Amino acid sequence: MTAARQPFATAGVPDASVVSETFISPDIEMDLGAPTATGPFEVKLRASCIVAEWTAKHGTLLDLAEANGIVAPSHCRAGLCGTCRTTVHSGDTESLTGAATHDATILTCCSAPLGPVELDL
Ligand code: FES
Image (cartoon, rainbow, N blue to C red):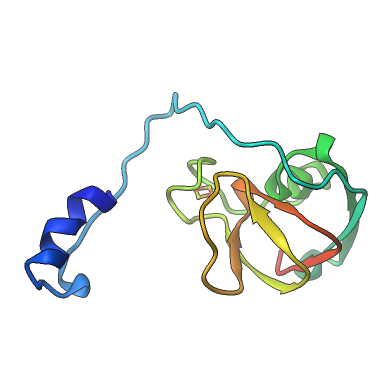
């Protein structure tokens, strides 16, 4: 997607004028890296009033939320659609896809904590 958008940026077309949509194969295989930290870390899911313990065996923060009964928004589970994006109120996380984070939100389908965190789930 980035490669497809680059020629427009080079030609001076404002980014807001370029419309794109991501289509995802239901058979997509996500190759997530292993989390840097192994835990255990406390994960507060603020909107659900749940406090859970994460360790590397729990997988992503989306996996942990679902294991605790939360029906969290998700779609591609591959870090592409943004459906699982949520706000981090406190703590540090890492993207298991290596994608950089530019604000206080994360994609829970491909993120793991680096310590205690509080999410808006
Ligand atoms: S579910 Fe699509 S980016 Fe997370």
